[in-house]
Image 1 (cartoon, rainbow, N blue to C red):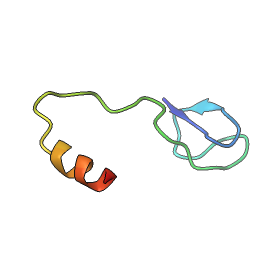
Image 2 (cartoon, one colour):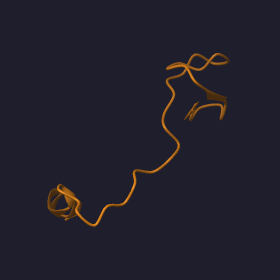
Image 3 (cartoon, one colour):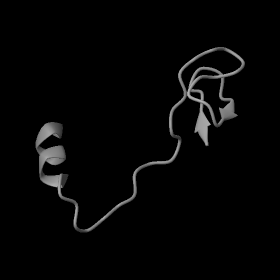
Image 4 (cartoon, rainbow, N blue to C red):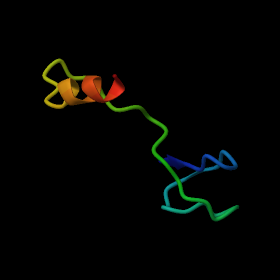
Length: 46
């Protein structure tokens, strides 16, 4: 399921049926202790 950040509507499509905005995945990425790109993400924060 995806969520429209503009109006808050949930849908399965890539665009919102109410306002036409682009939808996003509302669930954060899963944590993995074997994170291959964690080093680069921490460097980008600095």
